[in-house]
Length: 113
Image (cartoon, rainbow, N blue to C red; front, side, top):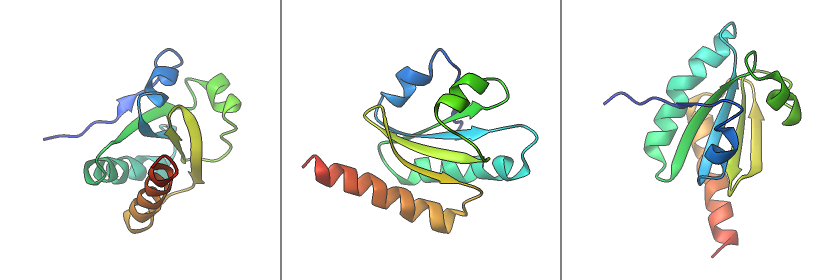
C-alpha cells in the first residue's frame, strides 16, 4: 500500500484543516529537506490513528503561506479542529517528530476529556 499525502490548495485547504487532526507540510520542490520530510510524515500518519497529512507548495500559494506566517522550509503545522495547535520548522527526523506529534495529540485530547 502506497501512502500519499493530500495535495492542498487555496480551495481545499480550509476544509482539510477542519477535518480533524491534521499536519500540513509547507514545502517547495527546490527544498531538499522538504523532500526528505514526506516519507517521515507518511510514516507518522500510519503510526498515529486519527492523523492526516497534507502538503501545500509554498511557491504555488504564497498568499496562504504568508497568512500562516510560514517563514522557513519545511514548516509543519498541526491543526486540531481547524486551529493551529503546534508548529515546527526545519527537517525533523522520525525519532523526534513522531513522539512530538503523539504528545501534542494526547495533550489536546486530554483537554477535551
